[in-house]
Length: 626
Image 1 (cartoon, helix red, strand yellow):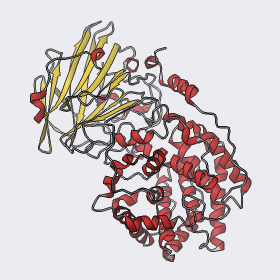
Image 2 (cartoon, helix red, strand yellow; image 1 turned 90 degrees about the vertical axis):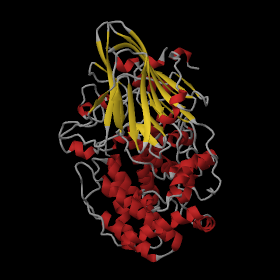
Image 3 (spheres, rainbow, N blue to C red; image 1 turned 120 degrees about the vertical axis):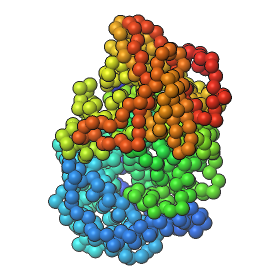
Image 4 (cartoon, rainbow, N blue to C red; image 1 turned 45 degrees about the vertical axis):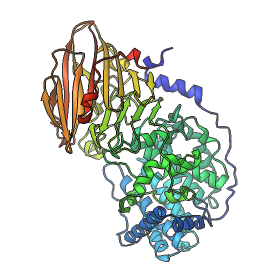
């Protein structure tokens, strides 16, 4: 059966049937680590971190940044229960950041001021009316925050404070998670499952001795259900929700696994889920040469940031090169910005046995993963700041947090991102204006949001129609050679009833320029085809050529294989009162009117100025790409 023509849900079902392991292990009724602390950093492990920061300047600077931030937190007002729209999440996340930082600062320095401030914050939060269980991520992060503080500061907390915090974890955290009105996350296959289950087991382990039955039920349920989300890493580690949600869902998944290992000496086989350990390669390759991530789907458009989970993966895989990008973040002159990461201290916990002096260059310059949202990521170098980076996405718009971006690409060269993706828009800015943002059907209001549909992505639009949400495309073939790394996808099913066939291939030619090749067979009607590329550059048009200028660099766009078409520019002004403005960007592309049954083979070259003399005139069809 040809999987590339199957709709995504059926593809995923097949993958699960083939790869899903059987979780037969039971969580012991007795918790083996009886005393506190038992979450993440056991008693005495501070010694290893102190040795690390004494001997490694990078780790020392990070440690000092956390201590300095903890002193800043002491001067902040206590948190208030301020809900924004349907979310309390910003408060929960700040609670986790504050309490994790303060608790770490106390564990590593013994300074009572940090423990006292954390205690005040936890008692204050315990007095909230609730933690907003209707949006259970809010509860999960708040529960984790109090669990870490309660566990790590157990011997310093006043008895009255212990009682209040413990009861809050149970009454506003664990017990609501057994309410069917709130616990739909148990059946989710995305980040909600990972985050909520992680928050709940932290709460359970924190209060285990006082609520053993509730805690054990919570732990057993979590081990049984988190596998549903972990299945989405199969078969290669490509995370369906993209870069931003990898940082969220996978980080909490690692927090989940690590705490089980610390307490029980096992993660009950969960790490062996096919694709899970491999997903670190996906994440590393998703960062471009410029430091900006390939931000398809609901991801932000900024540069990446230190991700503590990568240190866990580097240790688990015994692969220090996975920290090639992470080390760059630690080499910044000012590390204070890293403190916005609410689980930042985990980097020292998971990296405490990893010296950072001699991180090797990653061996592979091409990474390809299949699964729910297949992606191909390639570059000409890890060390050259002017290297070419090319990202290419297949998949389906129906994936959680997905966009209509199947067949889209991004491209960097000369230290500049030329072909870009907007990523997401702030959810509340849309929901506050009545937009139903999270529907996935073909007629969902989600697709009226400018940044989310195919009109603004670097792919084709046919007769101004939307891509099909029930379509699915995989990476059909790819190559890894230095002179011609490439990927090809048949994206026909995403253009059902619009085109008879559509295959797209992208490649880096001779480490010099990029080619985007489209091979199309039109259906039985006349079709208007628009080729599109979003860019932050200034665009100068010249018939079948266009010149992009940015940061003193130039990129040339050339059309091969189509006669009579000319480049055009299109505005990125959405023209609505709910879409975000997009200053400093423009879309460049061209249009072609295809006749009924017409077969087209054409390609666009993206050529840096210095590579103009290296352009090949010969054009190979996709079947010949080897």
